[in-house]
Image (tube, rainbow, N blue to C red; front, side, top):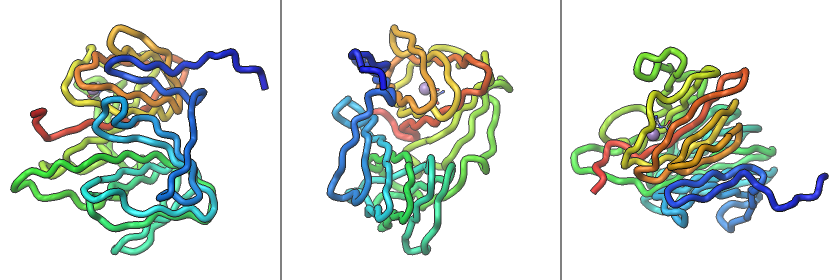
Length: 246
Ligand code: UGY
Ligand code: MN
């Protein structure tokens, strides 16, 4: 292995962060037995959610997050078991689950697996109800062009309705496709590049990004992406949704 000479593609800005795999730091936590976690986005940055990668080893298990916290998981490799009052379901590559706040469950595995986890405090609203657990697979979700651009397809991974305080989507760009303008909005984002790559504009900087890079975009961080290369670029993107910013 070549000696590291102190270089990384990771960058930390006032309203954004790019975390590249070359700087991942794994930790263990008492509640995550037989797993290593790499935290990509946490409230320490200023974010109002956490996003991390979990590398599970045989014997892995963990239970529901803190009271009031909702959880989303997406399996990247291998398989894990989700167990709740509905039974036990095996989730494998590209399968995902939304687990509402205060929904008792256990995740476990007898094989190696890696998965993405996103957690945040649920924001209830009077008369809006509460979301239910939702399980699906990335390939099952219908995608639609963004603002009529067939080269940029958006798939909504979660059902819609006022009880949902978040949106998690995939965005798939043909080579050369880009966001139609530089977005600046109060919602924040957690993003994981799934495939391909391109150039991400964050505030006043432009970054080359590739699969497995993670990005935090804080409120009002100017943002734009253009796909480059020979293959599609696809990312998963979280945003706070359906709630006023007050
Ligand atoms: O939904 C969004 O705000 C999305 N278009 N933002 C992004 O891709 N940076
Ligand atoms: Mn956006």
